[in-house]
Length: 176
Image 1: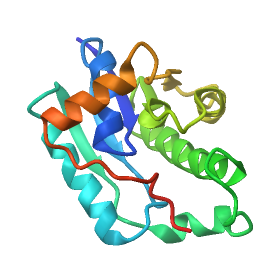
Image 2 (image 1 turned 90 degrees about the horizontal axis):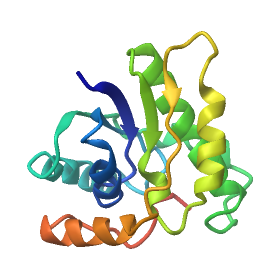
Image 3 (image 1 turned 60 degrees about the vertical axis):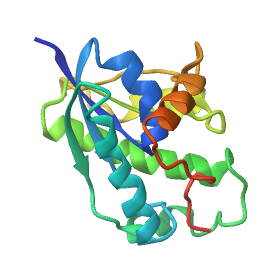
Image 4 (image 1 turned 90 degrees about the vertical axis):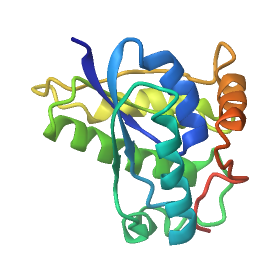
């Protein structure tokens, strides 16, 4: 039996890179928690694309957290003018990783990780060092560090998304 893994998922495109590397080893549940996305319509559009991954990958489940931008705003209120990969982006990543870690621990997942490292615009070192900080010592849940863009992961994700006709957004999604 495969160990369970909660995969925080920013979008279906980045999920392709992660699923390609994880599904053979883990029972993967996609966890779509992204209160940072600009507009409820964009959030819904990205969430709907995850269903297209069922046919291509062995996914245990998909969990979509309702749109809640009020979770995001307090964390970035003083950082609105900063560019991607800066302090604003780090606060956003931290918020989503902490939420995923809490959900994974409460629901008995062996591991959790995120698709965020699939993007060439995201800092995998920051993601990996931050992800491990939310694991409680007494919790059986562990963070699985990864850099899904490596070894042609980003190329695989792009090609697979095109083949599956997955909507590809042109921005990270953050509300400005």
